[in-house]
Image (cartoon, one colour):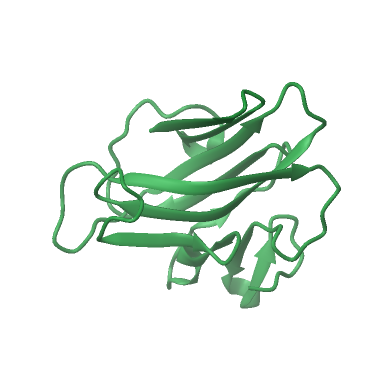
Length: 160
C-alpha cells in the first residue's frame, strides 16, 4: 500500500506499510488478526523550509473510497489514535526521528462480515512549517494506559 499526492509538484505526501518498528518497508501486505501494522506517513518538500507532518484522520475500508461502508476510523480528532483506547491495545505513535515523518502502529483486524480480501487505509496528512504552529490541532496523540491519559508524541499530555 503506497499512496502519493502532490500539491503543485512541491509537496509529496506518502503513506507506506513498514516492517517492525518502522525500520524498513514491509515486503508482504498480509497480516494476521492482532498483528501490529506499522504505517509511515511522510512529506517530502525539497523546495520548502523544513515541514512538520501530522496525521489528522485515518479510516480503514473494504473499498478504495474512504467514504464507503463499512469503515473504521482509527485516527480522529486532529491526530488522536482512538484505537489505543481499546483494552489490551498496543496501538501508538512511535517517537519522532524526523519532523517530516510520523510512524504509528495499529492492530490488524477484520470487519465482522468480511474475513478475507484487501483492506484500504486512507489518511488525511497535513504539513506545517517546522516550529511555526503551536495550535491544539497539531498533535499526534495516543492513550497511555499506565498513566490513564492521552499523550502526545513527545510525551506531554494532549487534549482530545
